[in-house]
Length: 524
Image 1 (cartoon, rainbow, N blue to C red):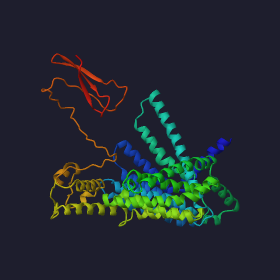
Image 2 (cartoon, one colour):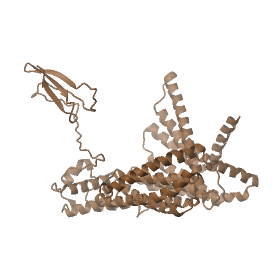
Image 3 (cartoon, rainbow, N blue to C red):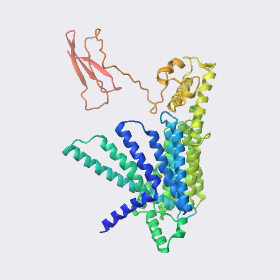
Image 4 (cartoon, one colour):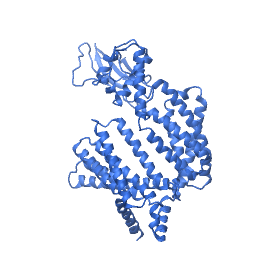
């Protein structure tokens, strides 16, 4: 009986979500339909998909604002109309582009992230419910929806597989359609159904019984499960402590050397800052000694580490110029440093200020002229122009090839051109021309071959052989094919035996030395 009641409660929550977020549900349904068309027709509908997702996020963010501060239906309709207008405005912006660029994806992703944080933060502004509790409710809802969606997708996938194997042939695209329906339609709606209606302006029109019933739903939503408390307090925090000690030891040992030039450390420090802030907010809802110690100590550790990271990133800008990635690393570092200082002195109940800061920094990074993309485009274009002028390669808006440049200057030109082409900014640079192709025109334009950044710092060469063309071995006696993918000790070192001039030879792989080393021995 309890199981049936639980199922009925979940279904009721889904139905309530449909009426509570009509605009969001409509946009999610449209997004699912458009994505299904893209899967079936193999046509790019990315602009429409992103537009509908923006509309869906605007829908639930504006609904949260209405629930917190208003109770009139006319205001709700006005909020929905505002969401439609903003969505239309977004579509008109992305419609003018022939393709969906990296810049469009990142701008949209950052905007959606800001709307999601606003959805969590707005309902608890000046409320009896604090941000930590609202974040806990959203955190639980996210993983609940992830679990249910995963189980649902797995179950449907197994059913489709069984039908395909036992009854009749099913299209391979059925799996993508299933993922589309579950991921775009079911999962977000189920997530929204788990978010309670927080105390707001409409409470004035509710009876005492309704208010108490709603408060109970809210309490259940933000109550931390015992397993999560154990996970955070006795597993995640100790692991993060060990990770922190390793970072501190590395920084202390390399503060005068590799720390400032080690590109591998930057993502590790950013990940550390994200983990500390996330765990701090989760630990703010916990009442045990481990959580309390974490809240007291880690903000003080976070601030100096993040300041070192910001300084290192600023120094790297002198070598690489500003890219959108480095812009976001520095901006997040500033946010983390400010948040760390606030966490040192601010009561945990006021953690909503951190959410407000995050929204502000996110919007700052996508609004021209201070956004990541305007700044990075200006930086890389200026960097390229300066190095060309310095080497007298740019005159009268025309580039003169020069193969005698220093390796450092060649790398600067290559890096800047690579970035500008990747971000689709090269067509706006007059001296490159609208038809500039980095793969076909780079050598003829600059007089040297383009450098490609290798993140693994390994010297490698890629050679390709047309397998349809014959090989001329007229000057040779024997042709042998050998593979060197891995150096497996169990692999037979002997490749082949062959005869030449009445003698027998054995070609084998060398057991020591570099991969690809061969040994030819006379076995007679």
